[in-house]
Length: 421
Image (cartoon, rainbow, N blue to C red; front, side, top):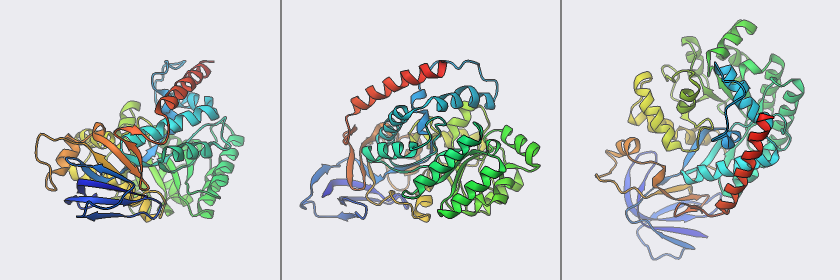
């Protein structure tokens, strides 16, 4: 099986070189793409891309499937006055209410939303304290159904007691035995030394990495100082969390000079989530002295990586050193993370076709200006994952979108009612 893209303008995602060409795409995990002059080639499907841009599909560096059904929900029982109360009265209330059907609906919708905005790979950080066992399989199966590759973890934490932490460790190990994945931890302030030690042992046993929120709010630092007499990054580093190139440190807003140096000299990657930080009023990301291993995520706010890149750029004008090129580098850094660590799914035959009818000339020299000020998810017309069309003419191909939306709406009502009980 193969797809031929005729009359395409192909953009190399690394060099930004433009080439007018036909593209032959092979299906499968080892499928390649060929840039060819001949358009008279037998292919299972032929798409005329005249006037369209074709480039590597996108990937999400940090997502939360479990937040998908939060959109439009009612106010919490108490109006949160700080970040800890936002967690307690909103997100921890929500994740404790999730059951298998709610998780499935959340995952199906998230996978569709990612695909329709151009992403064919998602790194997710999941929590459902009252539905832990098998939860990662539910998410994986939903993503597979849509055709989106994934790197999952369960958010291990002792905030709901040691028994739930044990179940989180068990779910993680069960999943890692037969799947690529990470060892998820919530944050330093909800993970005691014993659970931290066991999580890192699990990481080492399965040659994985830790996926954790780091200094998202000053509360994380205050708690670490009061309980362990050190700062968050120092604590994680002493446990060996930063020894793996697969480790992902989320946020890293409130880190001092010493912590930045530790991160910069480590193998770990940092993931920036600007819109979530704005929503939670926790501060502003600054990449100063953190090194070059910085990628972008959505933190469950949405599934649109083009939007995340723009937010990082515009907000960063007042709080960060970020230009057109830096925003694009962070947008694409997730591919380097996946390649370095040999994770499967972010393949050469993952492509996005953009129907971007610009009023001005677009070429290699000014592409980054168009990336920031022009191209958005409304221009995503078709998406190819593992050489298969999963979005065609802006429609999901592998499932009935309307059925999934109906299912997700039903589950959202069940979730919201349960959260108020």
